[in-house]
Amino acid sequence: MQRLKISGLPSLVNALIMTSILSAGNGLLYAAARTLHGMSLEGHAPRIFSRCTKQGAPIWALSFSLSFCLLAFLQVKSSSAVVMTYLVDLITCCQMLNYGFTALTYRHFYSALKKQGISRDSLPYKGRFQPYTSYLAMGGTLFMLLAGGYDVFLKGHWDVMWFFLTYAMIGFFILAFVFWKVVFRSTYVRPGTAD
Image 1: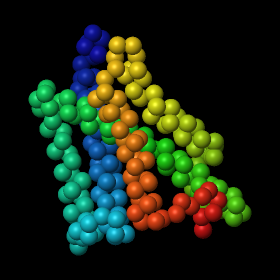
Image 2: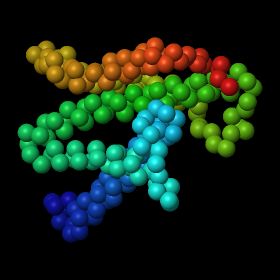
Image 3: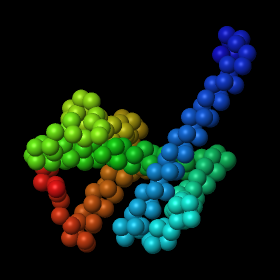
């Protein structure tokens, strides 16, 4: 942009990037606070997160979610920026797991609709190209999860720490799933069997 000597364009691009970052941050903060609030209402998180203001904002869930924004200050020093890189790796894996299992949940929902003879046309919204795009989403996220640490396996690049950062969330998810099923004795609802 500077080589093209178009004045104002770099500032416009920066403004658009900041708008995008603020929009994404706002959406993620909303989702985090409401999820924590909902978990609290169902008894899966401390009761304090179910408290709301008179206007209905879950103030304690919002405050707790906002506290994670303080991690951005890790970028202030170069030594702490390394920790930020570690967190980004862990969070990226977690986000892909969320996306992949959202697609799997849709597959279960789709199977239940099909088995019970409910047409997708009766729903207020239906995604295009379903159920095929859910297969694409599950396959794509699985590929990205497994290929995320490809450089760790290259000759001469093996690093235990990066292997752990790349794949730890997958193991943690499996352990958390098994822990929940064993401790709370919940059953897995097989595709097509949901009410």
